[in-house]
Length: 120
Figure 1 (cartoon, rainbow, N blue to C red):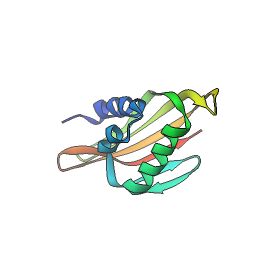
Figure 2: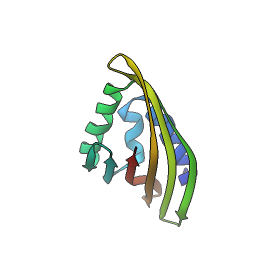
Figure 3: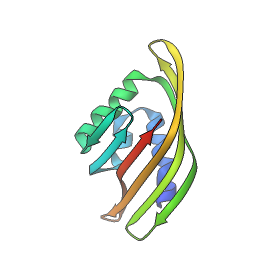
Figure 4: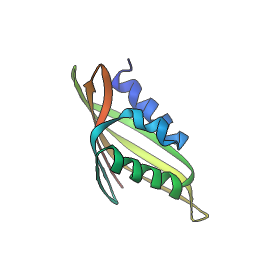
């Protein structure tokens, strides 16, 4: 089983694959995601939001850095970090960055993201 620290790195790699099937195993079915463009609750809404981003930003590279673990308990872990993305939007190079917070819960002996908040 991955630790939360290993999971955040694996989650970053999964996002860079741009394949929902690689990202989905990291997310709890009842998760809530808050992005600059809206809030999404439950795996179906989150899938739509993430796959829309994959379609909108071509050749995207997403990176997570300066991870700070605020809490690591047997069944809950929380971290903050800085993120950066770059890619092609509407045929033009674009990039952005911001702050993130993730809340992980351990269920059935696996860590899953219960909440993600990204803001630019």
